[in-house]
Length: 79
Image (cartoon, rainbow, N blue to C red; front, side, top):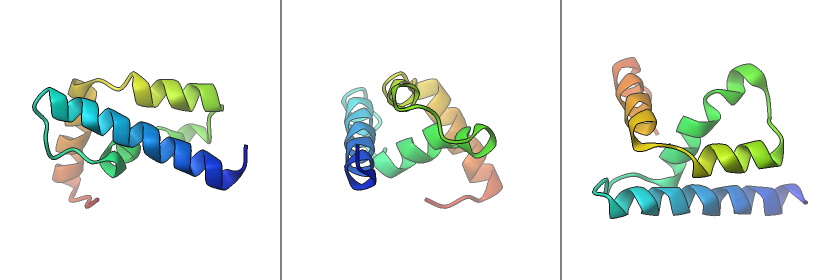
């Protein structure tokens, strides 16, 4: 898979997860924020295999996402 195609697929998955969060009441979640949450652990472990990446995005729970956003707010991280 070409890098450009991989980036497009990841963006679509993150957008899809953000839309899922919208359906349960979290209207202001963006695909970029989903990606920041999921990719945070990759800073330590390195780039995972594609199937792990897809699983991490699709299995992201609201509680984990909200914890990430709260900690980011305390740190002053902007997205």
